[in-house]
Amino acid sequence: MMDFTQSRRGKVLLAVGYLLLGLLFLFWPGASVRVLSRVAGICLLVYGLLRLFFGWRLRRRDLDGYRSQFFLGLTFAALGVFCLANPEAVASFLPFLLGLILLLDAVGKVQRAFELRRLGFPRWWAVLIAALVLLVVGAALLFNPFGAVKAAMVFFGVCLLADGAADLAFALLFR
Image (cartoon, rainbow, N blue to C red; front, side, top):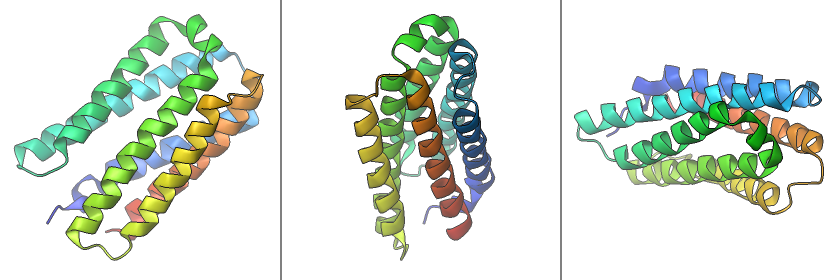
């Protein structure tokens, strides 16, 4: 049985990071997109590196799920490096990028939900519902990124708050 408590602290820290970033986007949407691109780049890079680390730990213990952790880690780290290297370019397609990030995160949560189901956790479906909601919101942002970056930033802030709250609930409920 996979021991989720090993990485519980990391999941709580990531959830708090999502919540803080969501509040930043929600209350200061008019802030410089260049600065937010760099902050997002740093967060994506750190998140990607953490996912790579979690995948490495899972692989060392011969536990399932390390491939998805490596995939997510590489994807998020590459997005982070791109955001740091090209903040002006990010501003032009930030809403699209934010939708893509939500979709990737939702895919990881769907995989996590089915892993919990396989392991016999009784509330695995709650994680699946949260993942499906994020999937719909990410797709809506990806295919209808609003006209203004400011509106997209507020929308993404709300999405990050919901995602962070779901991750925090997951980390606290499944001890």
